[in-house]
Amino acid sequence: MNLDLAKPDPLPSYIYVLSDFLRGQQLFSHLFSSRVSALSFRSTPLRFYLFLVKAELIGWQHIDFGFEWRCTSISHFGMAIERILKDDASEEKGERARMASFVGAMAIADLVKTTLGPKGMDKILQSTGRGQTVTVTNDGATILKSLHIDNPAAKVLVDISKVQDDEVGDGTTSVVVLAGELLREAEKLVASKIHPMTIIAGLLRAFQLCIHVLSLHHYQIAEKFKTDLMKIAKTTLSSKILSQDKEHFAKLAVDAVLRLKYTSWLQGSTNLESIQIIKKPGGSLKDSFLDEGFILDKKIGIGQPKRIENANILVANTAMDTDKVKIYGARVRVDSMAKVADIEAAEKQKMREKVDKILAHGINCFVNRQLIYNFPEELFANAGVLAIEHADFDGIERLALVTGGEIASTFDNPESVKLGHCKLIEEIMIGEDKLIKFSGVEMGQACTVVLRGASHHVLDEAERSLHDALCVLSQTVNDSRVLFGGGWPEMVMAKAVDELARTTPGKRSHAIEAFSRALVAIPTTIADNAGLDSAELVARLRAEHNKEDSNAGIDVISGSVGDMSELGISEAFKVKQAVLLSATEAAEMILRVDEIITCAPRRREDRM
Image (tube, rainbow, N blue to C red; front, side, top):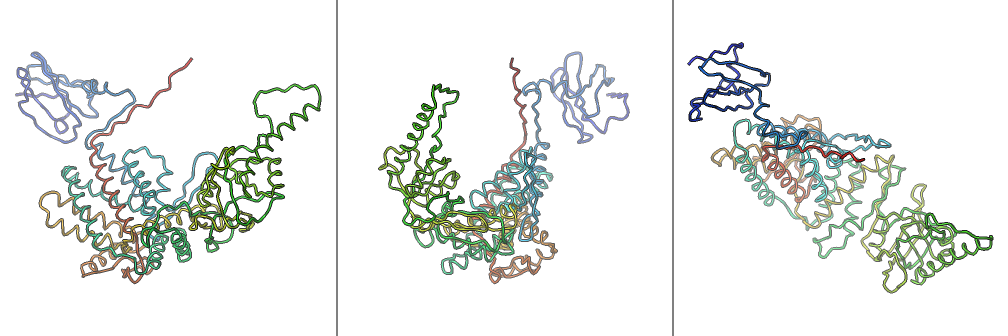
């Protein structure tokens, strides 16, 4: 057998497959290098076509074997496959697809990793649209949903962060970091030729054990209910902009959540609609306060009563500006000014009838979503009714909720309209702004948190931070299981998972061990972000957890390992459970990927 290849030494780069041209079966195959991306061959009675594929090889080679062999690029035989997809569509298969998924997910995790923990850094997000708005935040969900991402695996992590924010309010950064670390470890296992399904089986086994371990190590907060809620609120706020005044804001959040009515002492509502947050620039964050009742960010009009007791409130969404003809394109031809005056009188009469219908409901306060023109406002003032116009839709919906009324748009049947009630309506001043306060509302648990701060950026971030704390507290009121914080849960779970890995036979044990390493990455990242020696701290933390009933965690304030029970660092069981569940499912979903198909963009048809 004589293979005569005229070109310079191509042997180290190709796979040669010789086929018996009569039977079309492979006789032998020899592998010289793994740099080949694809190979194909076909045979005819008189000619072999040998397709040797290499990125830089395009052209002809001849082999002296009694037959003519022809070599060409991959595009010749791949053309039939590519015709399935449109011209602009693309696909990545096998290792390339898996690597693209891993790289995208790990890049997203690395992006938000520096925001994790009490000493996490902030990000500035600047939009490119009109006005180029700027957002300063360290909230994982806010950062990720502001990004325009092309990588499909990265979008999976963005989605789990959004779900975490909607579900429990906190842990949006932790869930992305944990999912990223799981995929980082999985990538090493895939490179070691362990099948993705074997890795997934190990990860799911480790996840089930983690949930079981957490359920054994939690504690209930029934005895010192408010004290433990304060600890959870302070732990949640410690990584936010409110960390300097976390004692003050933790008390605000706990008081607001405890106002929610309970069906029993520990079974509360997670509906935060009755807690309103108003932002007013000026003063410092410490000037923020909690006020009973509902505050509407509107002014009372001129000549209207400034104080109303035992108010009957009609909340409406109706046009009160129809004292002008609004038929577009209409032309009215008159032959004297007297008739113009008659038209104006008819328009006013129409509005007067509408106001009379509203007044027939027996109200002394009218709140409208739309504008109220001068004439109807004058009619309401003459009747001693407070008229509030242009209340934003979110405002009137919440006002209707807390006062026990319903939003009306027609007024022909007063008996079918449900009015709202409150004991007192008055005008108050916050800073230099006038607002309207509704006290003694029918929904007794309704309250308003007024945030003060130096700028709109500070107030926006303070609102996000307080909202996270309120969400976590409402979930804790509903599910009173609590865990220690500061990396304690991760170390407890990692210890149990390590023991499971030692007793599990086969390749699954490598995946279980990888889950343990991913868990330890959370306290490692918290220490790194605080500028501490993470290797030293995590090693000491692991040693502490080998003792019985250890409550050790990372105290980033003192820069050492501390007792989480004494330091009062606690977090909700439900938050940690949601983080584990979402991160594991996201990692499993990305690991299952073996092909990425990018569809061709839809083209706009040329229209004549």
